[in-house]
Length: 150
Ligand code: SME
Image 1: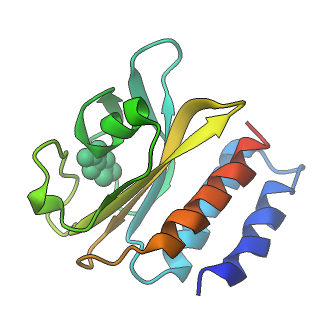
Image 2: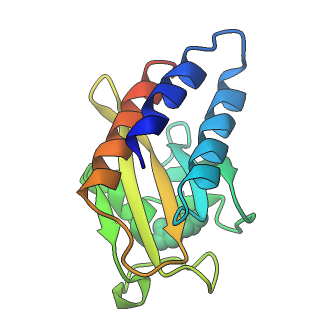
Image 3: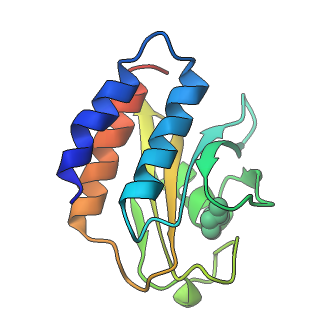
């Protein structure tokens, strides 16, 4: 279900006539519309020289959490750990920032440019424990593609 989306991601990334922000938006929309258990899909990026993340393009309900300090929530922890964070049950997490009461699970995968963690892709799911190794590999692929145009 995930692999047929890879060429579509590549096509979006390679559409050089489209503004980068729009291409990132198209990727968020593609993932949310085609993967049943992806209910919110967004990119966060390091906010200049500040130790915080700023929300970039996203698809899904608007969130209040447009700025997240490093270390806070799942996203803020990934900004420091440089590692994927898969949360099968958000209720079991102490350091978690709730965006919607409907969210049951979350996955955050860091995005590296020239080896530097410059942001991340964040997926919220309203389904319990939906993410597997396939999602991690797929989102790593998405981020590697996106890194080419940042
Ligand atoms: N739940 C995230 C905050 C971002 S929202 O999911 C869009 C976290 O704990 O970092």
